[in-house]
Image (tube, one colour):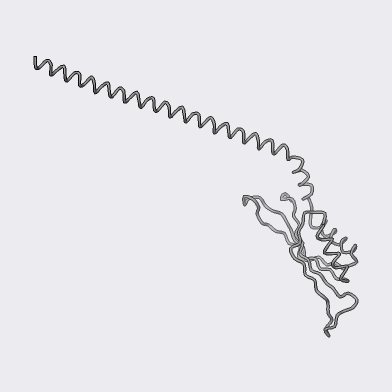
Length: 183
């Protein structure tokens, strides 16, 4: 009888161990299912956010299409037309204009892959003080996207050191003009 109760005790112990293994397996299965469900929800939320961002970007591109077209039109300038505008500004201000050093700037903007097409001029003008100041004012308000990188006013002198009375002033202006990257 001792042997049968020992066998029964071993069988009960084995059944208890197997039931605990089963409980552990079911617990891990439930945990895995829960983790899979959470991952699926996160993927769904991530995809939904990407869709919303794509729709917002599409709407932004669509809303700015006319503005981008206007900007392209505004930036569609070439150095020859700008030099003509600068010469007209000099004539308007009664100053003699000389344009030199028309250089292209091949810098990159933004992400480093988009070219920034801009070019610069060095404009020197001679005339009375009022006329060279007027040239500087006109070059600051060119009808194209531009900036003044530097202005230098100088009073002209002859070799003896006395001021020249007829055209005593000279201005040197560095103008930078932004153009369309496709040019």
